[in-house]
Picture 1 (tube, rainbow, N blue to C red):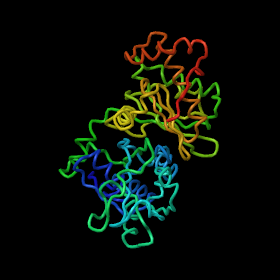
Picture 2: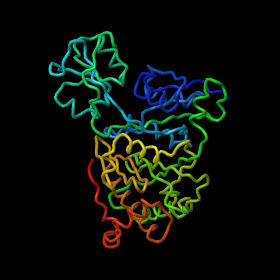
Picture 3: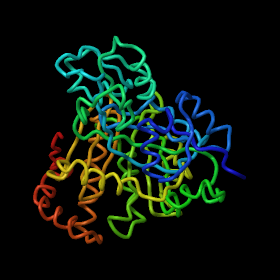
Picture 4: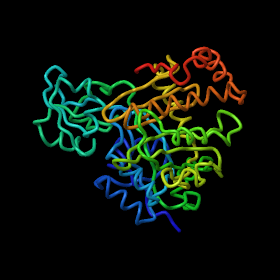
Length: 384
């Protein structure tokens, strides 16, 4: 079965298009005017792949729940999941100055991602940077536009500022579709095969009652159980996203190097409240690893502390880079409770002799006295 097309939200000159081309150099992509929901519909009904922005470090889930909900409902599979730094260039007409600006236009998401800069200006949002840029060129009532890097008219405009994003601004992108990349053997899809294979990591999910700041005994047992098949700290399945599915339930997206998970959460003792969602997708690279690498290279302040958090608009991120923990979520109390529980379990396993890296052992030794006295409460998260 042949792959028909690959579409990126808002087209190849958008933030999503740029990120897609960076991830798959030389890949032929389409798209531009399709709405987010339309792209999800295309991926569901066609032999096509779509790339969507999923989550932003300042904004949270983009078009909340749409993409992950389709995955958890088994209507679409994840083909790749990766982060990229997001940069917004401030563009004005020739002769403009920042001091004279009053009204700025850009994609809606820029309001959160560039909030510190935009605070003193009137802002108007559009569905994409591409649409915002087109409108800016046609409508002189707008004094400036926030664009994706290098995607503006050099003849009519000037760059007023190289990047007006808030600090630590990155977006997670998701490639969705129901066609096996390995079978896309036409020459035009070679970049997809080269950079998207082999699939080494499996992605699965957990559907459970909404987590609260205090975990139930059942939820704590589940978090303990995800470690039981691991031979080392690096083998433990990793939680990457926690999102609301409905008023009383949440979804947890996880990744693992194990092809055949034998978690005891699949046994009757957890049903019907906790449901394992197998086979949600596969990836050629482990999301946690590439995200930590991105943070290390692009946002080195993340690595000035052992335990960090970032709280944004409808979003939060908690991380312990040395333990390869980085979890995105919708509620800081919920995510913090989960991360504390996981760190506590990791320390228990390291203390009991589970193999780990030198840096992980060093982290354990640094905090072990506090851990043995206070348990999970020893962790002090630094706000980034």
